[in-house]
Amino acid sequence: MAASDNRKVIAVSDANALAETAADRILTRIAANGDRVAICLSGGSSPKQLYRLLATDAYRGRIPWQRVHWFIGDERLVPANDPLNNMGMARQIFLDRCAPASNIHPIPTDSSDPREAARRYQSELQSLYGADCLDPARPLFDVVLMGVGPDGHTASLFPDYPAIEETEPWVVGVPKAHIEPLVPRVTLTLPALGSCREMLFEVAGSDKRAILTRVLAGENLPANRARSSGETVWLVDQAALPESFRGQ
Ligand code: 6PG
Image 1 (cartoon, protein in one colour):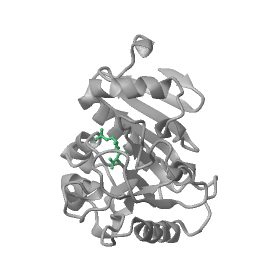
Image 2: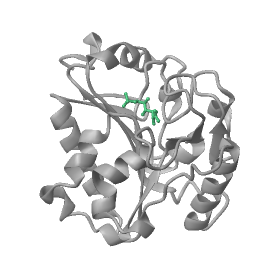
Image 3: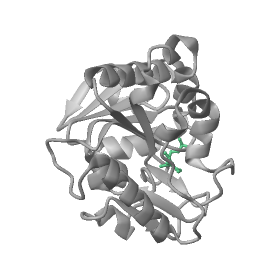
Image 4: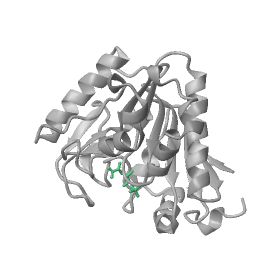
């Protein structure tokens, strides 16, 4: 529907349509890459419906699981089986049933130091990517899923925190969260998240409308600064859509 700079906003009717549209876009990106595919998942509650959908017969059978690798854009430093663990949630909903274990790449949470966990995840990403520097011609990920929090954060990049300004590291530790759950976080930085063919935000529900209005007005918020080197798409349902975007 509306396009401004390299961001496209796609409005859909409701959360079901949003999950279906996201799943179809992921399938399209997988099909476009005949080699190893890298998908970076998001945490929080927004992607749960999409994850459930990917595990259904309709979608599961269309994903070449052996060549798709799954990463996570940010993690809460809690044990892997804690309900707050982002990758744990994705594993429980679909990955453990569908993906080979060696294709699931969680951020380690066995260290109490988020910086140490960040260093380890960065090494893993760099070794799979095969280089320590991101090449704009060779994106790290095919798809990066994102959500937005009420303060405009995305991944664990919080407003006015130093992590949002990082240009060199791919992954950093965030000792103190800005918002609940108030546990240390580990997050990919803007350059790492942005190194993708498609960045896909999922935004649904009326409680997202206020922050979405601020983001789409161009406010300097992490979710607004997160851009793909390829395509940046915001999938938004009617309940979350700001008044000024209706009917466009
Ligand atoms: C996290 C997330 C975070 C999330 C947004 C939206 O670990 O909390 O990765 O960035 O995507 O806060 O969360 P909801 O989908 O729960 O609203």
